[in-house]
Image 1: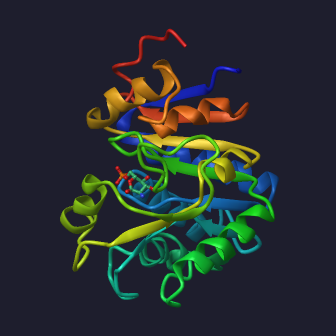
Image 2: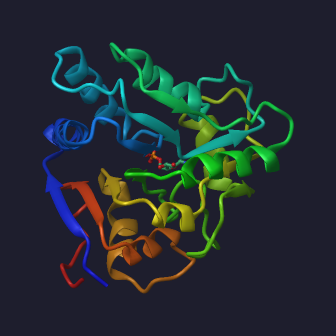
Amino acid sequence: MTAPRLDVFPAADWPERVAAELADRLRERPTARLCLPTGDTPAPVYAALADAAARGAVDLARATVVLLDEYLGLEPSDPARCDARLRRELLDRLPAAPAFHAIAVDDGDPVAAAAAHDAVAAAGLDLTLLGLGANGHVGFNEPGSGPDAATRVVALAETSRELAHVRYGAARTPTGGITLGIARLLASAEIWLLVTGAGKAAVLARTLEGPEGDDCPASFLRRHSRLRVLADEAAATALSGAR
Ligand code: GLP
């Protein structure tokens, strides 16, 4: 197993540094197929990327964006919906928006929606960005998810249901979710795990330095030869360097 590349940036310019790396990738490959997460971690990166696009420093017009995960049981207009959030924080702020594949959770058949979204991702992902759940989840691959986990309908951990409501402002508690599975994420050509804040320090150390295990699904990302971790200084404080 190759040790993941770890980049630690000061919190003050972490969003701009990550956005600049992303802009470089998009310049190298303007037609990149990106899998993107939502959450408080990537939000400032998207703001910086949208600013860069407004300055003409990057162009996503020919890129394709595949949504990582989505809630079940929230209205399409709910501000906490992952598709709504990605549109609001990034896509709608771009001078020319990329093709966007949301997850068809409003069609009444979540199993079919998961299968259809898996097929979109299976067409190829050049780069997958991920946040890290405080419980070690990636996407909605909650604890108990193994490396072979497929794209599927999932029950959410209680903390994830609460977070949707309390922190992300969902009008009600979601009933479940659909997520790209860990196996599909591992098939991406490259993965960047984004981690910020002291509150994520312990779970980042667990992810990178603990034993691989389904109590921390993010630990399986270490199987990927092109895993890169982009952390701020606070999130990196519990790392011992013994990787
Ligand atoms: C959420 C999402 C994940 C996200 C993670 C961390 O529940 N399903 O895709 O990356 O939890 O969120 P945050 O960045 O807000 O800490």
